[in-house]
Amino acid sequence: MIAVPVPVKRLFDWKVRGVRCVEIIGVVCVAALVFSVYIAKAAAARESAEISRIEGDIRENRERVRLLRAEATRLEQPARLEALSREIGLGPVDVKKQAVETGLPAIAPPPAVAAAPAVEPVAGESLH
Image 1 (cartoon, helix red, strand yellow):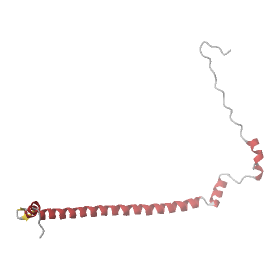
Image 2 (image 1 turned 60 degrees about the vertical axis):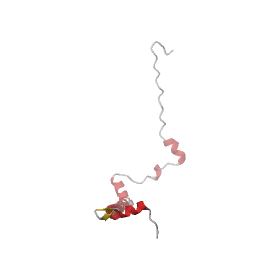
Image 3 (image 1 turned 90 degrees about the vertical axis):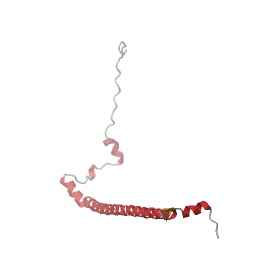
Image 4 (image 1 turned 45 degrees about the horizontal axis):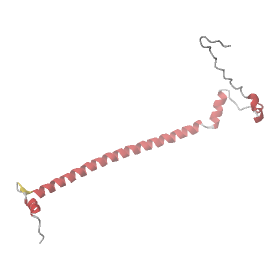
């Protein structure tokens, strides 16, 4: 037989209103475990709802991206752009108006000349 120290034996034998103290501690621990499992389950349900909402947002955004890509493709059609350019008077560049590389300096705009800052005489001095 195993010898149990006297203070531990006294703890197991101690009774409160006919119930041993160890049983009370056990019931409190089980209640704490049940409560913590309930809290964890509620948190998991909230996270699951948040994940579902985010997945729905992702699906909506994918649909919007698909629609915007289709709209961009429609707007970039060459025939449509050509018709619009003709409506406002644009057309292809005439071959005679094209420039070659050697002729670029002749048609380049003149460089802007920076004006020299004006020097004002200080009171009592002359410019000479």
